[in-house]
Length: 473
Image 1: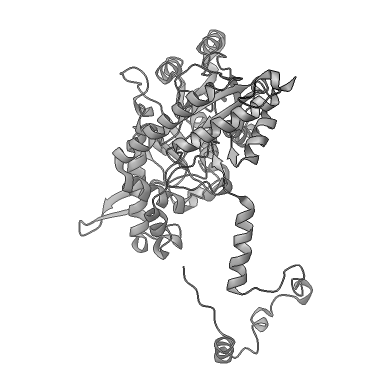
Image 2: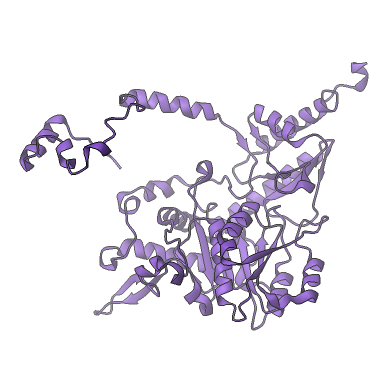
């Protein structure tokens, strides 16, 4: 938002008008011993031109990289109109819309967002967002435990769920005596091991409140969501879906998972909205979304916007089901994190409106196609192999017969961010890289990755690409 600072004459005139001798006098109620007496560590102010030069230099230090890292934050094209609209003062400076009579624009936008997310996930109701995807999963686990009439305080957490999501959830729930029980993945497919679940059901499945189901999972693989959902419901558990919203433009929505019947579909769906018009921004801010069935709406945390009519019968919007005080009632509240991410939700709503269903589907299809093309190229490089054989969306895991950190470091030196090293989270995959491609990648980008990877692996194995072994004798 444009801002023109006051001149010294302006400041002097305002002080004279209120009878204050100086700006410091406006704060004379602060005890002198609490005054820091200046900011010696802060340099003198710079001119606008020098600030521009400084920030250009800082930006240049970051460099420009061809990015093939996914792992929860994805590089997608964002139409220029999205943030041009989002940064208008009406949205950019808007406060939480507690006063409906003064906030109809914001409330209507949030209502439209909720409608879009409910449609995308195939569930009945959405809240107005949460902090991020990881905290949304933590809230879903708490919600499932509250809704469990048997008082179960254990939740099944597949190892294929994003490791950061698992860590945040564990931190959030551990002091509430809620246990997350890990479910292993099948080494061949990279998806949740159904046999391991069956073994748990043979033990005592009645002690679990919910099963978490990622789609796609952290390895990019597509889980057997119908089987997992039906298994959860057959054992009186809620099914919590953790989904990539862009993938839902192609895949069956969580609300339709499982066989057709009374208990069809996941009960709660959560995820991170970053793929919907939110730049990666060095890790955030992003926003979390949550949708659920009507029967569980009273257990849903966060704000919900409803549509109503006024005394004259005119349509209007307002926060509903929860009063403001609900968010500050400590242990009696459904959530103690009352901050939503309204600005990022605004971007996502505008982004989805601009692209529409067909646009989102086109982006998802192109991202899948680019990842397939990338995988084909990389698997043609000697020393590279595919790890899992399950279908995938826009991420896949490859194995290299050279230390992963060395490979990624060498690729980075060529301005290529080659993927995510899995060994830190999965020791059994220490020689594996999670790679991702989206619609932003060109065929030249994919070919450059292939060429550089082949060169690096060939050099590590003792010879340059195209140079016969006899040349080194």
